[in-house]
Structure formats: C-alpha cells, structure tokens
Image (cartoon, rainbow over all chains, first blue to last red; front, side):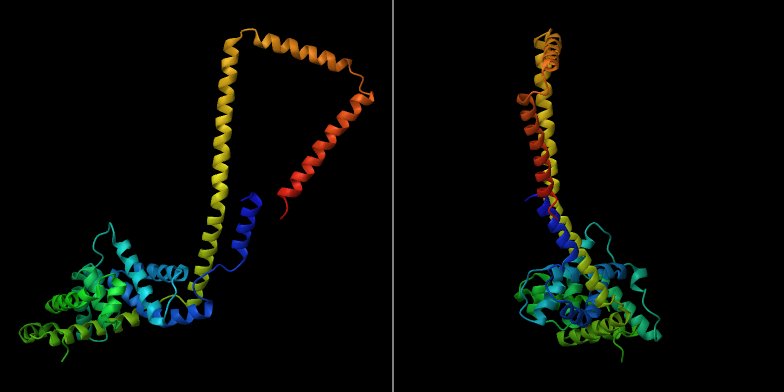
Length: 176
Length: 151
C-alpha cells in the first residue's frame, strides 16, 4: 500500500457513507420502537440513569456495526439486549454496587403516597438481587421474553432458565 | 388491593404459598416498575443517534486507514536509526584505526580541487556529460512529483 492509497482511503472515509448494518429509515423505525424499553431495562439493571443514557447509544452503535444477519425483528431486538447486558456487566467491573438507597428512592414525583412507596419498594428489592436475576426478571415480566430469548440474551442454557427464574421470583417476592 | 403496599407485607408473607401467587406478585411489581421506567425514559431522538453513529463510524474508518502509514513511518525511522548507528560505528572504528586519516582526506580533496580547476569547462567532453546529469536530475524530480501527487 502506497502513501497515496492510504490518503485516498482516508478521504473516502471522510466523504462517503460508512457501511452500517441498517439503512437510516430502518434504523430510525427500529430505534423508535425499542429505545424507550431498552432505556428502562438499562436504567433498572444498572441502577444508574446516567449509565443508561451512555449505554443506550453505545448499544445501538454496536448493533449498527455488527455483521450479524438477523432473521427477524425479535432476533435483532434480542441481540440488542444482549449487547446492552454485556455493556452493563462491563461497566460494573471495578465499581461499587450501583444501587444505593438514594438512587432507589430517586423517582419522579409520586402520583400518590401508596404508588411512590410501592415503586421504591420494588426498586429497592430489585437492587438487592444479583444483576443476572434482575435482568432475568425484567426480561420475563417487563419485556415478555420467552425462556429461550432470555437464555439467548443472558448467554445461559434455555433448560436452566426455568429454575433460575423460579428462584429469582421467590427471592424478589420475599423482599417485597 | 395493592400488593406493594408496605402494610400488606405480613399478610402477604402468610398468603404467599404457591408459585402461581408468587409469579403474580412479581409480575405485577415489575410491570408497575416497567411502566414507571417508560414514563421516565427520555432517549435522544433517532436522528441524533443515527448521526452520531455515522460520525463515529467515519472517524473509526479514518483511524483504521491511517494505521498502516504509522507502521510504515515507524519502520522507516527504525531502519534509518539502525543505518545511522552502523555507519557511525564504522566511521569511529576507521578513525581509531588510522591516525593520519584526516590528513590523507585533506590531501586527496586538495588534489581533486586542483584537478577540477584545471578542467576546461567549455570543452564539449565536459559540457555534454554535465548537461546529461542535470537533465536526469530535473526529469527524475518531475517524475517523482507526478507519481506522489496524483490526487
């Protein structure tokens, strides 16, 4: 490769559209359908809204840069959640537990006293679960994911999801 | 009845027996929390995320393209340093080996200068080779410019 070849590549990279996994319209439609739910997942799994904001964009960027051929919208969505889960796990390395009492009660203005207490309770209880249990319960009951989808997102065996979910449910219910 | 109400806990503790009941409690709690999370969510617009992704991908592509030139630069500098060091070593050894080396060089240069001064520059046997050399230097320079500045 000569110097001129290298310079030409640089110029091409500056001016032409770079290759991403989706075109703009498809991406924007997919993002509009999924970003709110993904933000909720990230914020509750990481316990930090700022982390959720950062990881949301990183998740979509990695999805766009991936070379995976998606069979369906669900496949793409599960892949996105898998990326997000891995990013949360990586961001947590070397840090203190992200859920603190202050963060757990840091909710929007309550509509009623009972609703506020209830949400704080759920958040506090979720914060005491293991990250994998939190993710599993959220995927199952907030996202409505099947066992095989949960296994795919969390990198576990489908056969073990039923038991792990059962234990996580009991643990959370005991804390509520 | 709201299952999440704190005052309901003792009652629930005794009531929760079957997995179906536990599942219902957990499903309700997480669904409520998910609804709250959806209300809190304020992700950036898809246009902004797309634009940032494009910019980042371009920057990374440019960095990846620039990487080989950095390697070539590094190799060239390393080769030059090695060559310079070996030449320096040879020169130092030569100087140490012959004490009168500089005097010999001076005498040779003086002889060469005297010979050059004696040459008749108007002679065609001198003019022709010198013109050819100059032409070669000029043509080579132009050719190098055309090759490397083809953008």
